[in-house]
Image 1 (tube, rainbow, N blue to C red):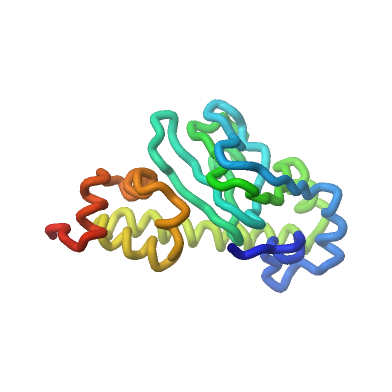
Image 2 (tube, rainbow, N blue to C red):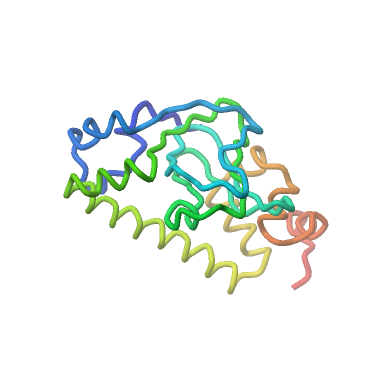
Length: 191
């Protein structure tokens, strides 16, 4: 697990944010350490924060327990629709590992940073472009790749996923049964 030591390490700066920009945001940045099973967002609630994972693992799931995504240290997360529209979420966000440390900024404070700092406003554009590109890659993979290809892409991008995420969650994330996942892992999946 990669350990980050401060906001300066975890928030991507894109060459735009200077240390003084982060210092000015210190009062708005919240650091918390949570344990496995703790709920960050409940379905029906509005997602109030953009999070950066300092260490640990979080995931999102639907009310019927289908896995939407997992994110680990070095990445960011929020319920995108709820955070930006200010509408209730359809999903839950939970902590997957003990001692997961998160850095967050509220929607309100992020908007204030954008309004009061040209560099933060530019950063917001760069950050959202990066995240939109990442989401686009994910959705394109769902459309054009079969489950086996998505599984091997997942292993390549997240090598320790099998040690950190239950197999049932991986199968749900890939949109397949655990039997199909077992066949893929065993190399017996028929094409």
